[in-house]
Amino acid sequence: MSSTPHVVVCGPASWNQLIELDRLPEPVPHMQFARRAWHTVGGTSAGKALHLAGLGIDVRLWAAVGDDEDGARLRERLEQAGVAVEAIASEQTERHVNLMAEGGGRVSLYVSTPSTPPAEAVEAAVSAVAAADLAVIDLSELGRLVLEAMPARRAPLWMDLHDYDGASAFHDPFLRAAEGVFMNDDGTDDPWKLMASCLDRGPRLAVCTLGAKGAIALEADGTRHEVAAVPATVVDTNGAGDAFMAGFLAARLRTEPVEGALRAAAEQARVAIETEHLHPALDCPPGEDDFVRPSGSTAQNG
Image (cartoon, rainbow, N blue to C red; front, top):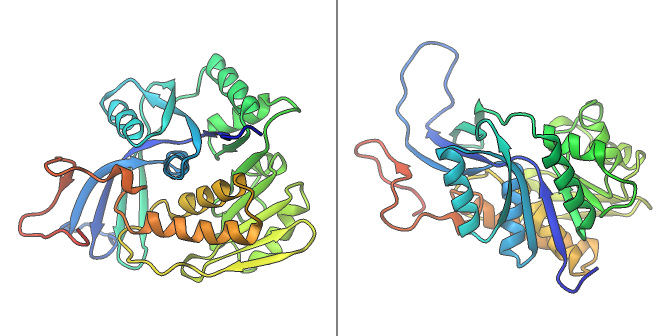
């Protein structure tokens, strides 16, 4: 590995609108007033790339981005935050509307999704992944196509399985190609058993985040690790898992043992939780018009 490790992150980046409500809408016709609303960068791969860049890692993000106004905003914000973007041509930029309520409730509405990436773009992404010191391939059509074309000799691959339940067929090729996998406990009542089943299919390490309870990890030799969550002033939980994974990988690239990397990961998750963007580098300067608040409302937490 070079003295300055090069990381490729391949997968979703989006331009999102976040709407904070007193409660999530009930499935009946009615009207609600938003507490506040704002536009910002979204997407699991964008989140990981932002936190890796913030930690001084040489990272390049490969993501489908449309030649449209949302895509221009997305690329500008990412590049201003220090993320090098390889934009793969798409008919439209991915866009979400996230409805959020206190206590972590969330509904994500996919307003637009990227088109199928062209073959030449997939080939270029495969070459970039193969030449990297480490790569993250996120769950997406782009990620699936890159994995299908990946040569046998390539960089160590790390995968984020999100709310994996241990049985999803879509997740299986990502899992089997991975050096290490991350997930959360939303899809399981027994995270240790889930992680063990993942390791049986090839990875050398599995990590499961447990929200406010911290995270656990299992190595292929059976060694278990646990880390507590770092106390934080919660502003927005979007992207906390991506920040956690980025913090862990950055520490491992700097040769930290698993236990130390987990502590670094927990600290990095705090960085994401304490901002209303995926990373503080995206914080809007005074006068930006990306924030829309109802008449008479006041901003919270700055």
